[in-house]
Each structure stands twice: as structure tokens, then as C-alpha cells.
Length: 522
Image (cartoon, rainbow, N blue to C red; front, side, top):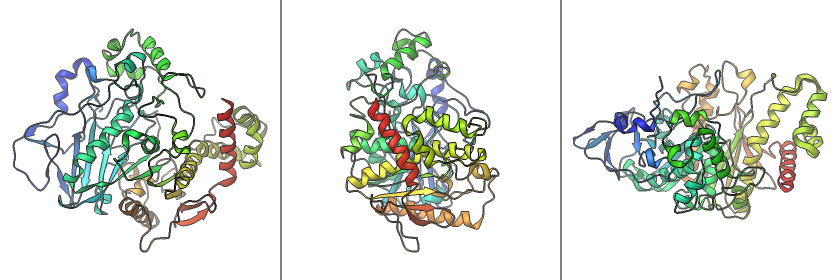
């Protein structure tokens, strides 16, 4: 059962989450870090270290502040259990996405590490940021077992970061407190702080601080697109992997109403009013349970520091980090929903006209429906490709224009989920294959076949090759050609991976046309 700690009781309870410190000699699973020694657990030749703090607990007066340096400890800290997840709501009933099983607390800035490397080796590193809309999840959400990927020769790090209003609330008082005149991007600053921790400490686990790949899925992939754009993370990573998420649409600003968004500070003032708090001090006195109950638009903002401009603008101007990327999306990012879809062809056309205005005809051509039975799938495809697929193609184009290798994919394999006919290649379904971990808890009801096992081995090998060399290709694998705007090559990760060209071109061109017209009209 999950528990939550409030700020008011954190002083007396925070120690309950800190592993007992022991005075013990170094063992094969003991490493010395910047904050002190930690001991891990060895399973099947892979050592795991869980619940390692990478910053001070963001509690009390540190709520809504940039992450602060952690306090060193004496003795050896046991790193054999997850740290708390950051406070969050539960997913709606019936959701296929998991809620954290660990306790929740604002003291949640922890990383987990898996490694099979001797300390004197320098193996490539993956730093993984979980998805969940920046509102849900933890470093354990989709990667509870790093053993299979570590066995393939990488060091895996998974990260917790602040979520929801606790991670993204902006407010004029918070801006005034900041030496950088910024507020609201605390979850993102946690993500940067985790990278800084990796840079300083990963060699102790046999990792190479000069071969760090940042990777994530969904909101974690939004994070990757931002880290590639932000000056704060420059030099802390060397390649990037994004799965189903890129911030290439309009973004809100800290001070100004722009792009159809209210200023982030204005949203924060409204939040405080709803909370009945007349100051940031009063907001900080509220328990996290109260914070979570207040409706909030969870998103980053263009603050002039973490994000000096919109992500799409930074990439268009070639100001992003010059690194190779492996990026893509899934065929069925949105699940068909007959309850909310238009019922008749006339209703479908009315829906397109309302949502897409002058672009509705182009979108109707790209997403045709011949019978009413086609409508549900057409709406789901349009929704998923608008929210995910088109942004991954834009990302590939921007990196190619900057002279960098971009390896684009579409995951089309339908996992053996009991509801596979409805779900298809659903959002997040590629993750067990990427980590070669088809026995993880979320896949316990899958009927695994040889096709699944082979695909998991191939995909995880592609990912490991990319992390190692900046190129997914290797002996015995179908060749994956990098993206260019002429051939538009991408890897179709289906039952048998194969390179194809011009991913959903008619559909994505129609979506892109609408988004460009919408952007210029604001």
C-alpha cells in the first residue's frame, strides 16, 4: 500500500526512508561515491544499487527550489531498496499503465544503478527518464529489472524527478527568489542534476562518463528533446534516445501569454488562490496531498535559463547539442475509443472541421473513412500521430539538418497482450523489448513467443550498439540507415525488422501543414 508524507511531518519521518548506515568493510558490491559509500546487491552477475540520493531532499523551504547538493553520510549506506517515488495521483481505474508500488514522499530524488562492469572498466552508460506526463511514475515504472540490459554491456541508471505542481509550479515570488530569475522547471532541473551526479560518480560503477546516453519514453522522451536543447545539460551526455515524445510544438512562457497559453506565473498565481495561499511560504506549508488535489497544467516553461527559447526554435536555429539520436514512436500510440469517437461520417467531418479548420480536407484525405466502422481507428491514428509520430520525424529532420546522425524507427510489432486486438503496438509497449525484459511485471500476462524473444534480443542489441558506438548497426542485424530528407529511411520494428522509407508521409505531411498554419496564426 502506498503512503505519503507531508511537509509538516517530514522532519520526524524522513529518516524512515534512509537505509540504515553500517560500518562495514568494502565488498565486491560496495562503491565509494561523492556522498559516501553504498553497498548493493549482486544478482546473476549484475550488481544493483537502488535508492541512491543525487540531491538534497526538496522538502520544507527547498520545495520549489532548484535541487541542492546532498549531505554526505558516514559508514556504508545500504542501496538494496528503492527510494520513495515522488508524490503523485493514481492512474484512473482500468489504466494499463502502472502506479509506483513504493511509498511516496517529497524526499524522492534518487537514482538506481545496474552494472556488470568491474570498477576499472569504462562501459557505456544509459540514463533513463521515465514517462507519465511529468505527473506519474518513478525510476522503477517500466524498468524494474536492469539485469538483462546490463548483461549486454552497459551501465543503466534510472531517475526519479519531481512531478506535477511540485515539479513545475511557477510563481512570481519563486522567480524573485531565483538567482536566475526563473521558476517552474524544477522537475527538469532534477533531471539535469541527475546527469551531473552521473558525470561525477558513474566511474565508480565501471561506467564511462564520456559515453553517456540520455534516454526516455513519452514524457521521458520530452525530457530528452529538452536536454538536447538546453544549455544546462551541455557536455553531460554524448548521445540521445527518444521513444514516443518530443517537444516540437508551442510552449508556454514564464512571464508572457503566448502561443495560446497563459504565462506560467499567471497559472501559478491562480493555483495559489485556489489553494487559499497568499504567499509561497503558505504554499510550502501545505501537505503534498493538498497540492495534488488542485488542478494544474503540468508543463515546462520558456524561462530564459533552463530553456532560453522554445525547443522547436532552438532546434530550427541549430542551437541543440550536436549528438547522434535514435528516436521513434509506436504504430498505435492512441487506443481506439468508440465511446468518444464520432458516430457517423457526417459527425467525423464535423469533428475534423472543428479541430482542424482549413486543414480538415487534407486530413480527411489522409485519414479517409469509407464506413462508420472505420471512424474509431481513424480518430485514434490521427490523435496518436499528431501527438507523437510527427514530432519524432521533426526531431530527425532537425538533427539531420545539423549534420548529425538520426536513426528513426516505428515500432509496429503487436505484443501478445490479452487485449492485443484493441491495443495493437500501444504506447509504452516497446519498452520491455528495448530492455530485453519480457518477464517484467507489466508483461506477466503476455503469452511470449519466439518472435517476441527474437525481437527483444534484436532491439536491445540495436540500442546497446547505439549507446556504445553512436550507431545501432552490428554484425547479424538488418542494416539501419540513418534518416535523410530525400530517402526518409526508418526502421520498421515489426515481427521482422526491416528498413522502409517515407514513414506515413501523407498523414504526417497533412498534420505538419495544420500545425504550421496553427503556429503562424497565433
